[in-house]
Image (tube, rainbow, N blue to C red; front, side):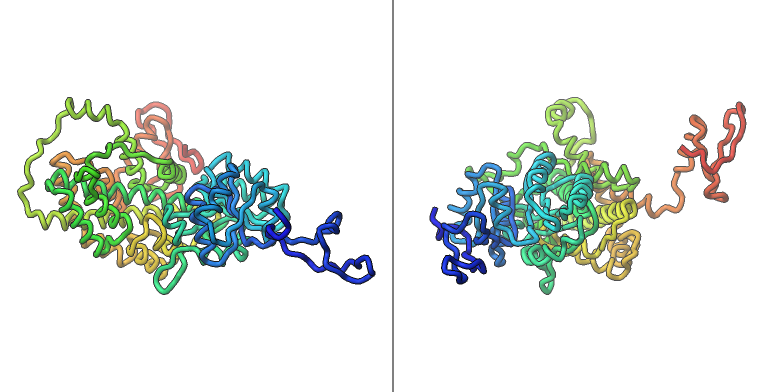
Length: 520
């Protein structure tokens, strides 16, 4: 390739020429003199799977020059020759070449598999970068890894950002939800790019803002994915009730979901459920009944449930959604069990079908409120644990568009936190309190009917159990404390003396102790 074919610019030299005057430097003058500038890319992206390619094209559409790199360099050439043909996207065949194309501070997005691949690229990039350069991990990394990387790179003068990216392939191409967190000093340098390419809602508000310190961005993305698990399972339980209790056909169910999408349930997942239900295979038959009922998972829902257990937050619905997928994967065992284990006999539904469909809709809405209430409880507890400053209304706005859980419903959550930024629980907000009260009779009818017929509804039922537990001033946990003290001397507190831990001699052997520290 000749000089004209390179993305370089000739620079004017103040060095005297052979005749003692300033001159343009030519190729023969190159040794020992830095005269050509290749720094014209606004940002680089490593990882040319579909998500990476689409994010690059999105940035290109918004006027940013992007340098593309992939470990298998042939993918760079293929991308430039096909999907990126005719764009301003440039490519690099080595990390050194990629870094040389970037304006300072250099901004590099990693969109590679979470785990060791991220660390491998970071280790290769650090020697090529300077103080103040920025590395952004846009994958589904575990938030603790992001916190570790922030600290390690801070010591080396590199700014690290862990950003949740949601919306799938289409979102990456036309507007994702972006949840960046980490080194806040990086935000002014990436804000314009991120908010330009993010999905827009309302009067043009971007579904992207700074989330918080260290691993906060990836923690918020993890909770988003957990809520996604819950939303999907709740819809599946509504579908199960329609199919097996009401005996509805696919086209009929599709119409119901289409109607629901015009209500407060208006969301991406309700919309695609209607599309899935009416989709027919090449043989003219509905595709959905042919799909094996064994749900896969990539682990982020599990991470949310584990975090909830670790921080003592009752995120029961997401946990049940994860376990429902685990149960579905036991296909062979379930086939055997279906032939051996007895349950209620299925009988034709004899009630008011239209009224029961409305009951299901309300049960779904109430359960959805519980799921989001629990998710935000986990975010609040994590903020306390790590000292993060999280804008809960802002997070709801980030999820309002561009992502898998996008829905009109999230605007109501933002409104709730705008009314009261210190809101402890969504259920205590007047709007959500009234919404659940309005759904409560239907919610209980649906669960009662499903239980009597033998329909599994793990998320509907755990949502109602949480609601009932949360609204009870007195729970039977006093008996648990007495049992723990009986067999393990773990002590208990009296209602009249909170903070004072007491052990009782339940058997008549030994003695009583009173302690403010002995509490295992």
